Image: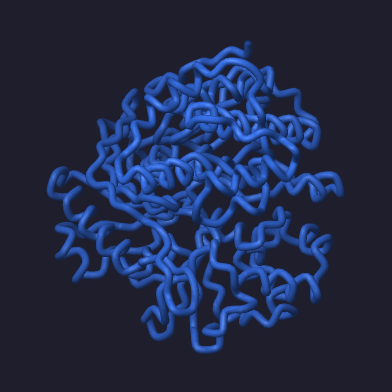
Length: 475
């Protein structure tokens, strides 16, 4: 099912953009020289502890989404479609259309057992040859392997596909997010059913694959009544990084990108995979992008380290912290700045991040900075150092001589991080747009409606015209 109309005046869509700490519903307006976002609602999102582990509060998430869409239509009755993007790897199990339980959170410890079981059956080197994915202990196939509810389910849907199903009744898997499961062939872009069978994952749970721009279905009548309009749900780059890379105004084929929020996704866009031993050993991944591109990238711990540290300090003070003031103070810290490995596994779980970072520093014989400003500076410089390593590795593995870095997402507002990244890479950093993910979501919807250009390059040119990035030159 496709929708196509002649390009004309400004057109309007709704974007549901879900991150690991918050979600939002936005109105997007697209025209020949127009690309605008209006925030309708923002709501918290995060893990909740259940008797069997860490879950998402999916009921609250879904309620917030539907309420946000209803408010969007109330504000802008001209909305023509809905698109949904979210974080990757997590899923819900369904039976007869009903969710069996709240989806597990990717930071739940159960997947560690899944890693051991999967690698005993299929060594990681073979997995990489088949799916091209970097090793992350929470990749979906590890979760599937140890999910005791799998035999009771008749379908497994990743978060954006699960929301689309609840809105429309359709069961599909959008391809960019499906590529993060570990069960999609890196060369074919199709389900690797042989791999699933070897891992005792029922292939009947894997839904039909669709590409960004496909109309998933129309809102169920009861949802259309609640939201206020009959609307199609259009598949976008439903992995939020896939949408963010569409919304990154890459200035040349030799531009790297960093999509920086809780995580920092650092890489380049390719048209062919790089399935070398060196790429596997560097833990670089091949997630699918819009229009069949490969997002050749490495996951780096991003602003998670800073946000968790600030959260701990706020709990200690029983008062909010002014983050811009803290970052200004951190930028003014003089002298040698100690750094740590931002990707240290001990920093991946919630809880007392300052103490965890201090322990990592001491374990490597490094001094712990005194005062919050110096401690913050160490965190930001450590994230930038990890970004720099990943950028340099991407250049070597892809054979590209990189000329710039486009840093998009929430991290683009962090001036200290942008400058530190430029300094440590020796490359100019072009920061923004902040809302690259929502923009990418909106653009793919608009293109499906015939309201935006046909090629990625033309879509990015529209982003560049309407959201000029801020340039940070290396010092």
